[in-house]
Length: 331
Image (cartoon, helix red, strand yellow):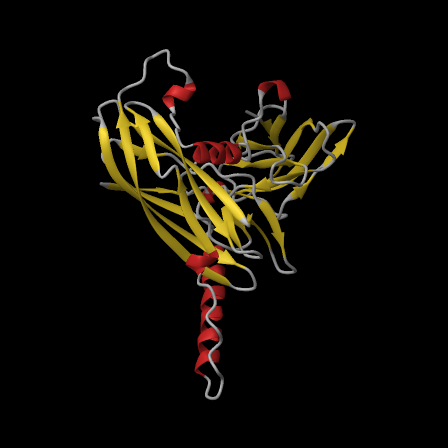
């Protein structure tokens, strides 16, 4: 058996330090209050593993040889608490999934649904309240044999309200590998889901995952550097410009990803403009090639139309490199 982690990306180190400090301070305060003479212990409160309850659908995963299947990791979150998106924002730690899978089975990266924005007087963070479903695709190799196999998953999360706690849970499940599908099989044949509850839940959360902008949308995305771009410069100031059709929506915002070497000085979500059925968003960026951690420089995030979690959202990723003659880079 081997372990596979699915979480991308981790919070920046300063965010982790801030979150760890908050957690330590909270735990110390609670422990001190319970130990003071004459102060009765408070009634038992729910622990972090109960504040977010993890379940897995389907509980028995069917995968054909050489095929794949979606698995939904669902967190039911206690009211007024929340967990974090892949980019938690000013503080927090994203949900992390660690799979222990049999040889010949691999897990893809988490497909994250559109997050909510949480604002306090001190910070802006991104995440999920009430419930969230994280989708992961499991794949079977062409060489794997048929039959049942045991597997397990470990979920870890930070869950916050007025204070933050670290929680986690383990689940075991079974993978049933069936015979290879035919070359002309349909998508439903390649990814069999016989559990009707799992099928409905997976479809519901798939509809909330941001997608790449369809070609017919003609969404424009480019990065401009008014003073030019230099790969050997300590810092390059630029602007990520996004525009496209707004449809029936009157509000639009950009939620940044955590992108090594590229930061967003405004920090939180960047509000755009909507006029005559089209939206425009201008996102100031700062590019430090020396901070890229060996990754390709890019500006990335999601464009969100409307305010509901079920409203459309589109994945944005613009490579950053030497600009064209016009002073911009575009995909």
